[in-house]
Image (cartoon, rainbow, N blue to C red; front, side):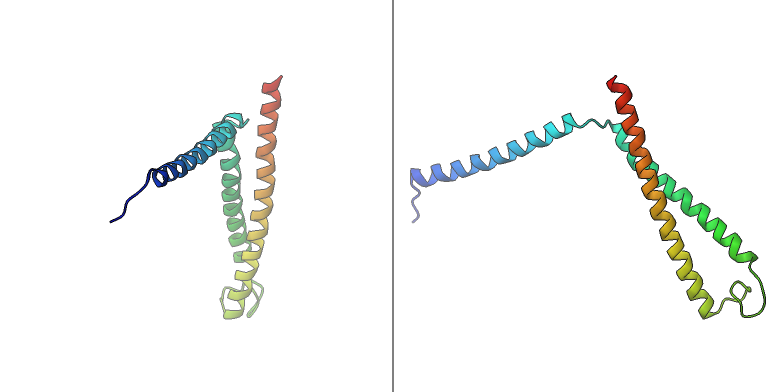
Length: 129
């Protein structure tokens, strides 16, 4: 038979209350951070949507230009873009396309991210006056 003393019950209750106090402090900290955040919902949406849309559009434009450029390059048998896709051409073209696509995506992503942050900063400066 297990007998719990009042001391054991009090120490367990104290640990539970201390755990709830830690949770409460964390919630208060998170609430304060949210209330002190200068970005509105619109600012956050702009900073998320603009780089995504710009990256999507840049990717589609690059794909169209790539397809148009590779279909026009027909300069003899065995050359890249001769209309016959062999293993070498497939590998080289795939590698070149993926490298250029990634590079363009990274540049557009960085520039549009900076641009959206500049727009938000400008709005904050105008609202502060």
